[in-house]
Image 1: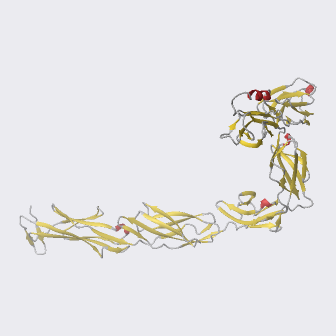
Image 2: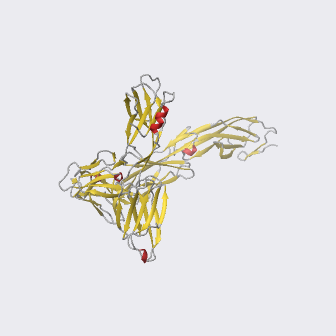
Image 3: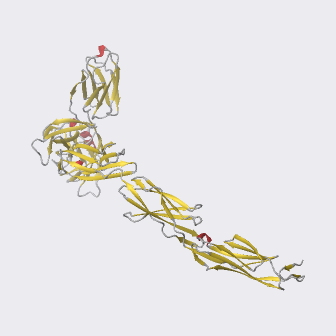
Length: 609
């Protein structure tokens, strides 16, 4: 197929040769003004085709421009060059460019050309409010309309004591974004700016800072004041007033006075708050007045030191464990004692105090029922201080005599006595008589005793069998109360509750009515716990009721509930009963002397002179 070209100006008709030959030698791509241009400048991509032809004939060229593998433009021309123009280059125009030339069935591509656009346009920052209140959220908008996303925006809050506060947000499909900044208490004027940045496989570019935006902050209320009246010179027992005040602009604020983390008082909708208290030394500390509205909180703290009026009392006692019948002597000591100091010595049981003496000393013969927790208190001007509690245990009186004798062996013989694994005594005997040991049991229950014998000729020590001694205690104080406590209507119910404070198990409880030998209710427990008896009363049930408690010691404790409230307590002395198998001890020892074993050692709770 041949082409016909007509030159109308010369009125010449040209018939080309029947066979046209051409080849594309090279395709060249160029960037003008250079391969790196500032953001916003014009950029031209030029494509040139170097073609050799067999004659002077025209060829139609198809130019295709690519960026990062995507087609930008297709241009058809009879010229061997063409260009693709970008009036204002942006960072999005950074990339690898390629030009492909196609003529008839032949085509060729240029080399890859990397073009970089440096910088970004200056962003525009807009504050959507020009005046805000403390605690309010301030919205800001930053935009770069000339650039294509994705874009990263960095907002900066200036004029802050610790340096700029930044917030960063990325937008994948928009050229703008918005963020909110919380207006902190105490801020007066806010200044903001933003910066835009963009990332790609060819690098990162960052804009210059945007315009600055100034925002005025309105204070909803002032920082509070906290005044201690009458002064900060405070002594225990003084009446102190804390006054918190704040200047407010008709807001529904809340005022709180607290010590450390404990709230003492609060009020809402007013501009002051007062708190009264009589102080003690433990009231020393930091007192804070806090004013809150939404997320806004302002506070004022004052340190208060309370001078001690008198010291904490000390309860002086002979020992934590004393024997029954010994003197129990208690004394309450107070440093800085003033003439009007009121001192009391008390016992405490189940959170309830019982007065023993309203003076600084107390003395009595110890009884097992005196086992208790003791405290003393001192009071001046309404200030009460309490000593550390002291648990005093009165041991169950009564001693046992234990004998140990080795039937054979040359005197002197050394004997050691053991309570459990603990050595409690030792003695040396220079004749054939048994060694004696006196001991007071330390607890209710089973005590195990043993002895050991040795002399100068012994290579090993000989130990006796164990002797079990069972110690039991009578029941201690009995307690009885009723619910309800006062008079009961005819046909209504009443409940009696009875329990003991000490005693060996089992314990038998009985409820009686006065002048009635048959118990109304009886129960045996392996505990000192409360035993209850419920009864529906009629008029003829009026009278006195009592509870009786006993255990294997055969000692009975009784308490009477008279006219529902009158209490009479019969107190019995606790004793120790030692259950021992002692019969025939001396006879047994005499009989064994006839044997041949010279290492026999016997332990007994009975000693024969």
